[in-house]
Length: 117
Image (tube, rainbow, N blue to C red; front, side, top):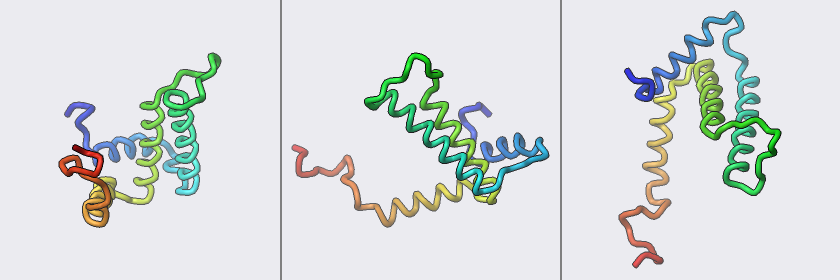
């Protein structure tokens, strides 16, 4: 299997295999939520540097949006694993919600809106 063709289940197992080699194991859900918040702040900072009005200082470490999203995904996967949440099932549930509750919320591309000719 190619690295970029892994399922969420594969990713959850890879993270669990990594964490399981350490005596400390997963941090508490509260600590991981705080860590997720930290990572979100780092992502927001990178987004602001690349797409916002705050340019990066010359002395700041070069980081990428991709790297910060990866950090968030790792911590979120740790949190899911520690709480025995299957990310595929969680994804399926949220997509069901969007495809039912929110199915008519947005203008579809194949529909003509007021401002489309």
